[in-house]
Image (cartoon, rainbow, N blue to C red; front, side, top):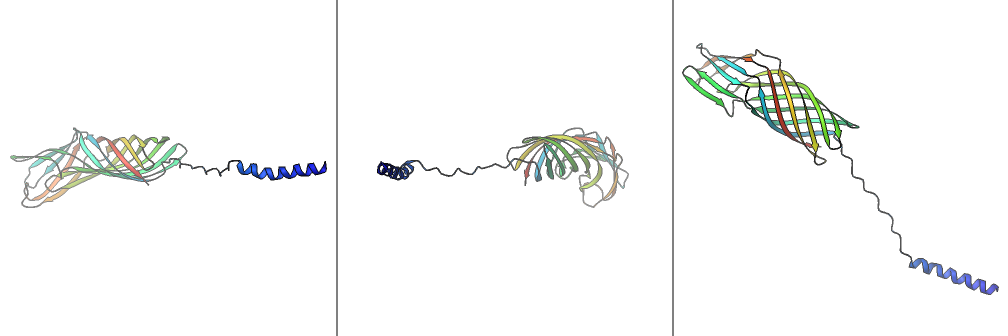
Length: 239
């Protein structure tokens, strides 16, 4: 009897490794791969383009011979285009940031002088616009809804024949929506209202001989409305 029990135990001892060898091997489970969550935090740089309009505003040019001319600005929509750079910091769903931009602003009008009239519209007769703004937004995943406001500054070329520019400062406020279509690229649409705090700006410039206007020192003063607005689209690359 004892011998039978020993023989059975030995048989089972040899059978267990054989059965274990027949079972499928269990490979280690692969490590999980986690995609990084999207965040609005970081520096970005981009381009923008749109249309702007302003209250009717004149630049009155007075020359050495007593003549005067007017370069009209405002009214009709004008092309606006340039670039921006900024930084965002996200805390939960809230996004806080700062952005600065600079762009060309198209302008135009009739400049009359004595018996002559020249159409002043095209390259060299536009102006520029810059802003330095804070941004506060609420992020819904990859969509950012924000308000913005801060400093605005810019100028209009008072003399399309020499390219002199008057410069003014004011403030701006606006809002926009931005969407991240990849982790690095975003697109936005934005509207700004701009208020120029200086409604009676006066500048002098010297016009050399050989130009369309007589040589001499000229005075340019602005008058009219001081409000303006723009709507633009933009694209940003986020680092």
